[in-house]
Image (cartoon, rainbow, N blue to C red; front, side, top):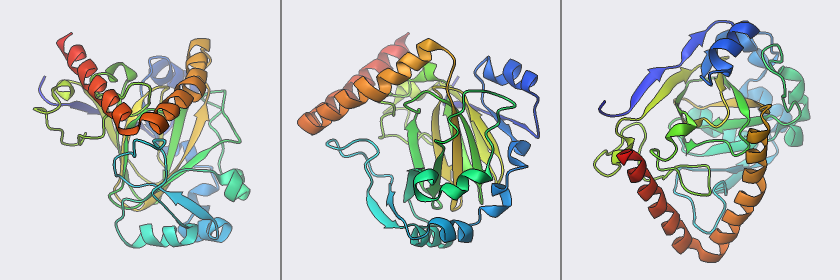
Length: 290
């Protein structure tokens, strides 16, 4: 097999709990469900103008596509802006600025009344802790997996967004950074240089394009890369995995690993990051040999 093999994520209009568990949740496969959000008030209510009305005066942190500063956490913001001004920006012109982990409870708790976690399919939802994500045309979310290892139902609004997914078993071949949840930022997953990054040659994943109202189910631990094809936004609803092994790993990621990694970044900066990147490359080549 030459190159990266990407197959389309299954796209369904609706699904029963039995079929969801049997065909997607239990085997750990992603799926897009078109009508999962059909009864949400948010589907028509959440326009850009409405969001400006309920939270437009808030100052929000913005993130760009530049490589992470070795001395700062991976999600350190690049700038700040008034939320209403940012929404105007992404509607009218391309920009690589994104809003990462927007908290609707903190800024606009009224938004919590406008969507419903799909409890008919799965339990364990963190009802009061959704996350929202905004991006301008062309902005990219770097390849990573979610540190808490939750199952994600990711619903998109107003525009299109391209998503590429990989199972966690490919983490070493993806040049996953040790003691972190993201991959080496020096390659373009859409068009990688296989001479420089040979471990990517032959891996397999999934791809899809989300449109308004589409909900993507991403099982726990899935690596994902996202590109906004138009200025738009999404909400992620998270559900805990029942496995104590997954829960314990999640707790480790959120406490010991994160704190240790941040400590090393602050104290050793470029030297520490260079060591991690070189280790990621060594592990990728070793995995490729296997």
